[in-house]
Length: 326
Ligand code: NDP
Image (cartoon, rainbow, N blue to C red):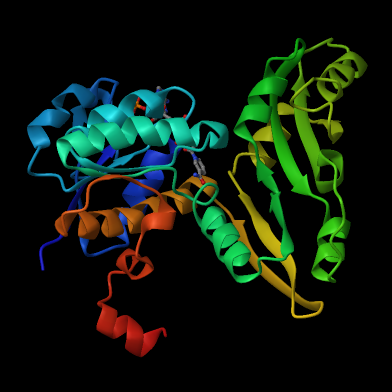
């Protein structure tokens, strides 16, 4: 069997994670990493080929799937349709409200080019979406709960760094344990935003800054913090570097439902991640395999995790899967 030839577009956290994930999958081979920066100035380990993104076209017919690792805010809306007009793609576009519109754009580009694009995969959207679908299909009478964390939220961390007097900072989203316990015990509470998650901020203040003023600015910030119970902890720059450099994340999808005349049934899926980007990348790589197989069968256009035959994610044959995992 030939190996699946992979290209990576964008070399940030997710791009580096994808490189590591490919190394764990012997049926795949990294051909090149494409970047908007100067390729000759990039370093990525021995034998890694960097190319400028404008050279991607030269790899038509050589690369089977491009894994797109750009940011959701501005990179992917621009890059996915362009790359999909030349290659099969996988991306992790995670702006939930804009997924339908993103799908339409990518679908049109991929349909026209005869390529296949798996969009918006990872863990949320991605594995969490799949579990929400399964749970709802199996327990039509019930209620869904999604909790995120404990984990770093990039958007909220950026927001606190923009507060005057803040030198550096990190924000963790923390699910409220008491509420999770309540749901696991079979209750289906009505929850406000504030009841589900806490926001914990660790802030390095500039010399002479008014800490009380910083705290008030953060906790009252609309959209980001004002709807949550938020704590602000001031720490030293050394502490920030020593204790807050990782990118942990995770969470749970829980559906609490009933069958028959009120028999309680609970479905739960959870993740505890030491590295959000390395894990997300591992999902992208498994999806790249499924996308490759689907495209080999002649399938084209944009797809989501809901459209994938699950067995196609595995490097094992259907026969082997039946024997070992069914
Ligand atoms: P980064 O900010 O690390 O990277 C985004 C892009 O920025 C890269 O592709 C790279 O493009 C460029 N870049 C990275 N580092 C540098 C640098 N030092 N200098 C200049 N440019 C740089 O983002 P992440 O990799 O952490 O995340 C990417 C996206 O993944 C997020 O926007 C998020 O939406 C998504 N995501 C989705 C998840 C899911 O479950 N679906 C979970 C986690 C993340 P280039 O090489 O072209 O310069």
